Length: 334
Image 1 (cartoon, rainbow, N blue to C red):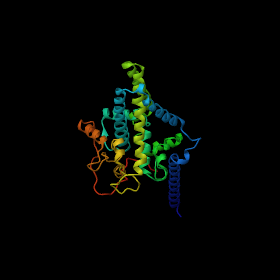
Image 2: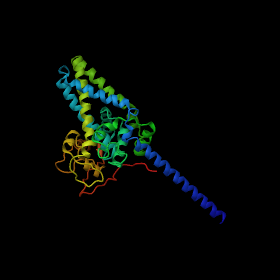
Image 3: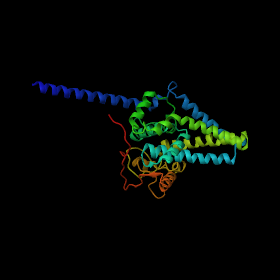
Image 4: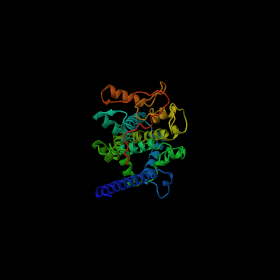
């Protein structure tokens, strides 16, 4: 064997070893991410007490709505308006269809407003939300799905999956793997660092504004209805998309998972309940694909398009029962 042949064989062997090492590292990183969302992580020593106590506190705060002294029509109105802004504009439009699925593009003012509303929802940072949702689509009803009622239980999918503590390494790899094109954008980093301030700041504003308008009781009323009641309602309407729409309803498309369309979740979650439609064609902006499947969030997208704040909107509805489940934004590979 000539010297040149030996050198070529050594180079080839070295490349194969490097490729094998990369594949091994990729598999290890994948396991780190997927294991962070398995049910066995939920143990007495593995609970994220910050998240758990916060969610308990919000539910307790909502109970004050039953105290007659803290009811006000203005508080109820504030709660309804903020529910729509945070749940529909913030989560459904901003975090979900814009960030996670790239169903449309937004100009600066609309982008800032939608992401701000998402931060006010109290459902976490935009990057974490988008990355976790992309993982859900990639692993829907399979091992590693963050919230599958099919593999686990309805309660796990509905809310228990939020309670386990996840390591900083798993969070880092989740970002690296599922939102590489978002993680370095200045506006994303801004909201990633400041999202708790928006949430807590909104509570202080509600309390102070109500107090100034009508005394401390009105201030507490605005806080109870504008944060406690509103957030509990928004949480459960969002969580029903994770749980109920993988258990009950009808299917327009033949997807590999158990996603279904459920009318009452569509009402509560501003159109997100047409979940089988969405899982079959995740990049399409409208969630309702039949004439009776109304989608309030789609109305808002249409309005933003009309005034020039939304563009490149993916709104062409599919035909037939086939699913395009690979229609996902970039997901990093080995």
